Image (cartoon, rainbow, N blue to C red; front, side, top):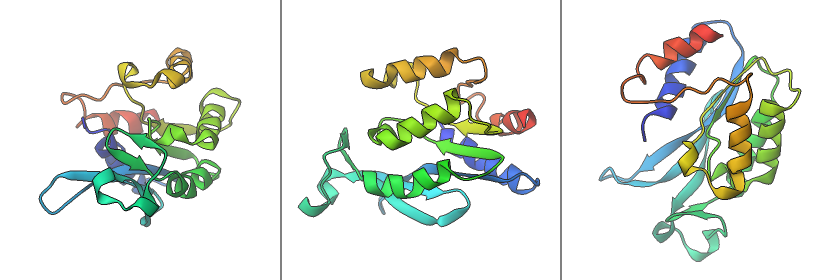
Length: 176
């Protein structure tokens, strides 16, 4: 990708030096010994050892692991995702990281509902840092949610590019 998760991880390392409470999750690519991407894990920010498989290439899983939720060649393990993500969304913290609000994650109706409430509802959450796909990559059934995110004046959307990804962590932490 362009580096959204890397930006989030750099923000986390900056925040660890400050006295802000934060929690959340990020999704991380999993690669095999030859460097090819074989899937994604979901990782809890406050406990990086809490890492579960979010998705794996379908040719790497057996029939028992097969999921009805698929994105491209990846089977998405919704139970694993919800086990890590849903408790995080309820955590009492100043800063919440949600990386990412994308196709795989939005298979979870509970996740979509909680994220919608946190971002668009009357949540008293101090600060949320989330990653979202570009609008042209949003599945049709979720377009309305993303249009609302883009339209809400409380939400600041920054595009990550090769040109700005190295300075974004500092820019974002200055907003805190």
